Image (tube, rainbow, N blue to C red; front, side, top):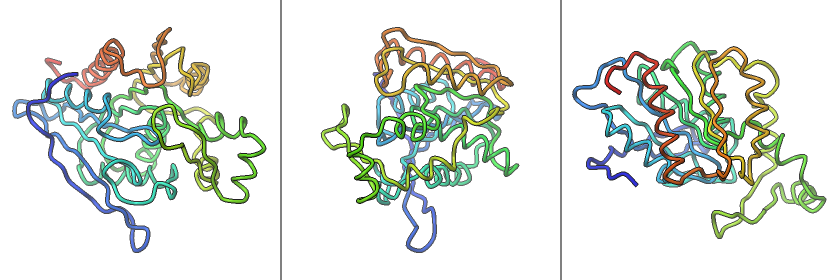
Amino acid sequence: MTTIHSAPRAETITVGNGGDARDIALLLRPAGPASEPSRPALVWLGGYRSDMSGTKAIEMDALAAEKGLAAIRFDYSGHGASGGAFRSGTITRWLEEALAVLDHVAPQSVVLVGSSMGGWIALRLVQALARRGLGPRVVGMVLIAPAPDFTIELIEPNLSDVERASLAERGYFEEPSEYSPEPNIFTRALIEDGRANRVLTGIIQTGCPVHILQGMADPDVPYAHALKLMEFLPADDVVLTLVRDGDHRLSRPEDIARMKAAILSMAATDGAPGL
């Protein structure tokens, strides 16, 4: 793993009002002193139950430090260092937090780096920014094992009778996690909200180049899902890199190298010299 010689600045913002308020933890790395104003900030959008201290997020920050780019990392509510209850989390709620982070930091342009569920958040974020007409310009997206619409496409069709009964009776169901001793929890609110946030329903216009990195040995998000996503991105410059022996995390040194190369290619599309 790359050593980072200067620590990013920690901040906290509050999103929501009253009983819905939650504190969102951020790690912000300013651009280097010699950085061109046109260079985009790198924004990390993590996956379900992951946080900003994961390997790929740290390596993205290391790349920013090396190249003099700004970097923005944060934890969704119920994740990592942020407040709020995990079981209250929905795509709408986490999207609201991502927008609030960008409004708080106010970069001129960004490269969105979304991992797993973060790929879904990234796609919804670019749509929300375009609809608002406010906020940074998205100059590129790097999506790592993206899982857009995963509640509808990957969870609901495979629910067992026991899980459906648990959703109906308790409002959630649990399943063992390969990445944590604690089980994954999927709530009825998350699944119902997922239907309102679907993106695989028509042409997705990101207005920027997109690079998808997908493992073909991914047990959580089949690579066919990445192929399906490409069908909804006909208007964009899209590159799909399939890693034959890649798993869901794509955190091996060779995977990190691919991620960094993809990020740098996106940053360079904004006319940033010397990357």
